[in-house]
Length: 555
Image 1 (cartoon, rainbow, N blue to C red):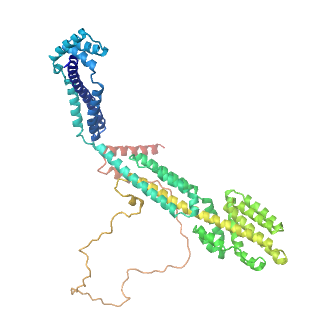
Image 2: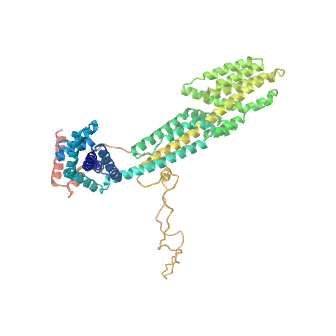
Image 3: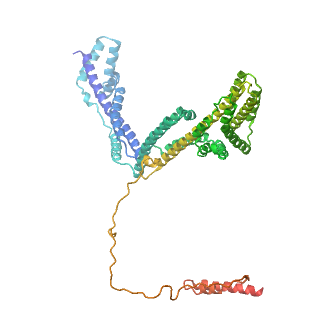
């Protein structure tokens, strides 16, 4: 074998020995680092009262060989480094390093060949195993202590406080999930049962977005905060639908119409706040008679006239009480006077359409006064038609259409009020549901959500019992033979009460009152004679009353 190959073989053995020594050191350093990190991680959990999760030990077991292998790969000795270490360890006077240098420079000659042969002969007598592989005992000891501490901390269980906290977090998470599903169900049911008018007031997409924003959480404060925020939004939505003024106006209209017998059904519906039924009853008053027959038209108009007058009186009373002015009603009067002076039916229809557009922005009290004005205009036109039969009935027809439009507008407003009232009730019920859900979140009695919401009755059925002392039948009274016989005449004998009649006449009884000073001697004596009162207190009481008497005598 050539001298160069023998030197490379020896150098390879030295390099393998150096790699083994570096692997031992890299493993020990990695073990110390992993042990320190694992110990700190365990302390973080133990000091907080938690049990150490097993995932940390698994991660440490995986990280140790990976870290050691990576360190070994990056720290392996090169051929030049192995040559220097071999020269220093075996005292070869840089023979191997010089040979590698000559070989890299491709230098040849007898001297180079002689140096290579001498080096090859020298390395054949050397053993790479003489290079020491040292295990760092201090590092291994520290790493072993850390790993033992981690092993001991792995058996520590959660503290009672932590167990209670975990149970609370688990309960909060489960309850928040249940509450979110229940609220989503309630909202979907609310939107499903809502009418078209109610859906216009609700904005379903916004409500669904509110429910989607609810999230499951382990933090009870955060859960209560989000449910309180939802309850606030629901309450604000319900308050926006509040129509207290409109309800007061309709209640006053019910009182006014109650005075007329034929309007009592509408009055009863308004008192019961059944606005839809009242609106339907108003629609039944729609004017359909032929205006060319003024007598029939006036007879049909009589009931609507009475209702409009009653409602207008309530509206004026409401406006005076609230300080509002019927500006819109005055505008309707001017438009009605223009309709009376109009001569063509086309112009009348355009004006009626303009009036209908203006009424879209009117409040309910203004709609009531507008209805009264339209009925008055129609009544005047019917009277003129009755006096002048040859008059063109188009004006009467236009006034009749205006009255029907005002009546329809008022009915629609009542239906909208009914929809707002129904929706406000539903929202208030949903708000109460959100409040009960918050109570369920804080409930510690173990009740279910259905019991807190009242959908599932709690408790069990009535129990049953027996009483042994109770008898089914009473015993017959037995005759013991002791009998007393009463003799005498009925109505005779002494009586416990007597009746006396006073003398007839008149008189006067008087009573005089005198101011007397109350005496407390007996009270003082009774207090002093009590045995449960200490002697010092008795003496003090005596001295007190003696002092009072002396002051009176001095005066």
